[in-house]
Image (cartoon, rainbow, N blue to C red; front, top):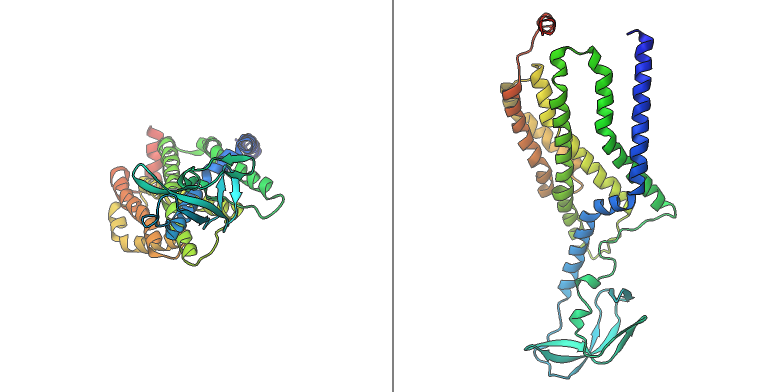
Length: 336
C-alpha cells in the first residue's frame, strides 16, 4: 500500500472508532442514572454503616427499672424519617413503657400524626425508628444547578469508552496486522484476552474490595472528628473511576510480562533477581493510587500487585522465548 492508501485506511479506522464511541455514549447516557447508582453503592453502603455506628453509640433507653404504663418523653437523637416524612433532630414525642412478649419496650402513648399519616397509639417505637428510617443515609449531593447533567454526561462518556474498547482494539489490530509477521499475528488473541480479563479483574477488585476499605477508613476518621459527611457526587465519581481505571491498568502486569517474555526481552531469572526493585515500585504505585494515608489500605492495594508480579514470573517461565536476531525472525516468518 502507498502512503496515501495508508492514510485512507487510517481515516476509515478512525471514523469507525468515533462512530462506535458515539453509539456507546448514547446508550450509556440513556442508562446513566442506573449506572451511577451502581457505582455509588460502595460509598453509600459505607456511609450507612458509619451513620448506624453513630446511632448505636447513643444507646437505647434503659427500661428495666421502669414500670408498665409509665409515661416518658422520647427525643430523637438523629434526624429520622417516619413514613417518609423527615423528623428533625431533637423532636420529642410522648411514649409509655409496655411489656410485650416478656420484654419491656417503648410504645406511642397517644395517636401521632406525621404529615398525612396517622400512627396509632401503642405502636412500638422500634417499628417506627429503625435502621431504615435514617435520613440522608448514603446520599450524595450536587453543588451546581447543571451538576446533574454534567455528571451523567461524564458517566456516559467514561463507561461508553470502556464498552467501546474491544472494538477500538480491533480497529487498531486491523490497521497494524498487515505489517506483522505470521508468528506475531498469533499473539493477538492471547494478548487481547489477557488485557480484557485482567482489566476487568482490576476494576472489580477496586469496586468490591479496595474502595470500600478506603471509604470505611476515611468515613471513620470523619465520624471520630464529629463531622457531617456530605460527599459531592462529581468528586466521588472522579475518585472511583480513577481507582478502577488505575487498578485495571496496574493489573496488566501479567499481560506486559507475556509480551516481553514472548519477544525475549525478559526472563524468569531476570524478574526474580529484580524482585526487590519490583516491591519498591509496587509500593510507590499503591501509595499513589490509595486515597488514604494509612498503611493498611496501602498494603491492600499493593498485595494483589505483588501476587500478579510473581504470577508473571510463572507466565514468562511457561511462554517466554529466547530473543532472536532479525535474520532469525525473518527466516522463521518466511518458512511458516
